[in-house]
Image (cartoon, rainbow, N blue to C red; front, side, top):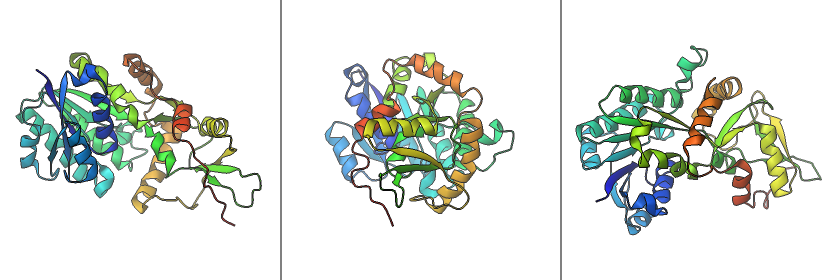
Length: 317
């Protein structure tokens, strides 16, 4: 008899990729049947999952009383919230705690929470405005005090962010077609990257042996990369010259919302001075990678898999 795994955010990047991974691997799909949680079970992505055999259910994360029914009968729950939907730490904390409470009330055996470091604590108050990190960390602290087996998945900076938000752009009046990767970090900054489609690779060990990972944090990244290493890989794989350019002052921030711009400015210090995960990040990453049965996707492999990058790049004169 298969155990039930309920996945919140089933049509999102983390939850959706976890479901896809399990469906594609008999070793896991024979152990777990899947329930996907989404806001609208009629949207195409939800219908597609239903057609693949996933039990799709609709939930209101702001209605705690409805969540017990959503997780009822589950052996395990993967819980993720979307801070940017409302850009509110208060909302995210309430939603995360409500899912955790529902899981405990329904005697769920394993709760996997999508977390991030507590930046205010890690930096001893020097950086206190990275709300979308601190809010997830506060929920993690709450879960650790509950009578439930728990593991904390901490994804790095998404490689997918480079497909749109931070995609290199042509340099005006440059006849050689050079592109610039313009970000606010220093050239020597160590940025952890994850191909978020690897979510299942990181969580498979937990689903196979939950007892081994009770109370553990998974530092989910392929590696730490500098911006220079990133542009070197772009150049090598695509054949297009890409250079690093540090954004300064009020330079435009592309497709980011005003709230995301404010958060990115606060996060610049976190990434530049604390490498996202803090002083133990490299050691924690080594441990996490050693748990995995499959290699995480490298930055170069991600670039190659998402070609073409710059076919339609145009220069604004």
